[in-house]
Image 1 (cartoon, rainbow, N blue to C red):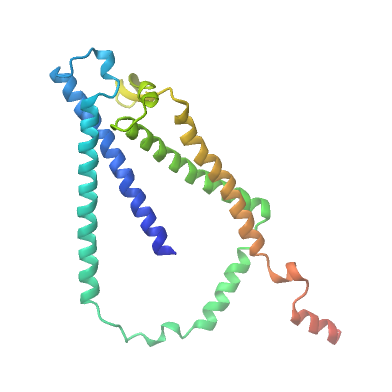
Image 2 (cartoon, rainbow, N blue to C red; image 1 turned 180 degrees about the horizontal axis):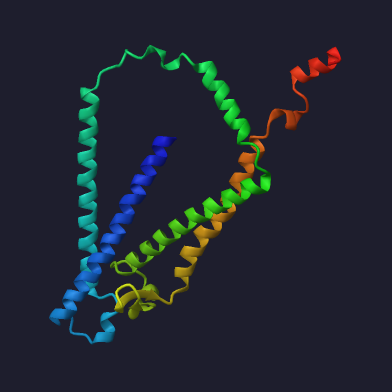
Length: 232
């Protein structure tokens, strides 16, 4: 299961890198084309995705994917070399000698982790789920703008996107910012946030219920029952 999630995260990271590379090179190609005045359009039309933007997007995606593949290949070769050079280590036979003590420690740790209430667990789950939703929402917006600058974007997306000049307090000057009036931009950000909040809260509550000590779920334990029978 962990291997599957690891592969999913790696694949998502590659897609995110390709999307960012597409946007970056689309903007670079657009700026260069405008500076060289080879687009044949006025300044206002340059803010819309043009063929030069689309060419830059394709180039950026290919460069990003090539870089990711080379990085993966180098990492895979390195791991293969480490596995080939490694040998079984038989000098530590006592690694599992403290199973009983570690089990006791784990039980004590689990018992201490059950002190929070159901509402607190749901609140923490919703908080972390919301953070994850915000992160996903930001990446979804990047994907959306990347698709806009690609040759495959619907016309409604393209017509609602523009590059506007906004004052940047850090740079202390006007800077170009990609904006969109399309309602889907808000949806691709809001949906992951809401799902993260609700899903995280439900997950936290379920984990809390599942980790309730047996004494509180099924009454007294067998040891307590024997003590009661003995009159203690």
